[in-house]
Image (cartoon, rainbow, N blue to C red; front, side):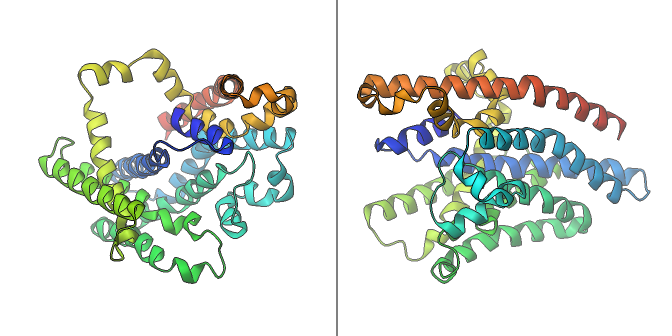
Length: 343
């Protein structure tokens, strides 16, 4: 979240990118597929043990709990965007309120000020809506093949980007273009559910090999070398390698890395990460309403001035994320916990 916030705050200033920070977004998408699939598989196990109809009630409960955890803070952020006059929400509200802003941005072909980050949230909402039908309604023996098929859709789609650009300026923002992140995370959850150890040597080897493939393809393209049409599977390799990172994180890091990750400040940022993501990109718009002079005063174009501006963005983001956690997310978490206990 720190890296993604910095990227969104610094890129409009024309500052050079020193690292492809979108990797952290891709990691979150794989993690989403892993966590959601694992939860759905465990829910299926519990319900099928009772040997009675359960899917309709489980779907209803799933959507309510999803709304309490994800949708309530999301709509609060949209309301804040309307309050600070985020232009694109006012001009195209249904795209945002119906979780289709990724399609909207794919059609218009530019990043709307302050609301561009909502595209990934829209894509995740579409995944959340469909995925329970895959995990709960297909026969168990079909699940690996279904997930592999979903993962294969993305590299195939990437091959047809030139044709899709006749309709979509940025076809890479459509959900089917990112299905491999979700599906491979889901496959990892399924493998673990069926007994694979998080410390499996095969998983470690596969993760490192796929990381090497990703770096090779990414580097070759960046340096202008031929990639022989393999760029379409570049992100698929990354998805597999990130599964290895998730496994390592669950097992736990030792030494200095472990101590850093257990730092209380980073733990708090992790707790507030959803709110930070919701509000970080709107912080500059909010700053313009509260402190307009930081944009027209020439001193704020100097390096010290820009850093002060960044601190202001961070303070606004932190305040809004903390408020979201305190008054929306945390109380609703309690409701979700009670629903899960009674299910």
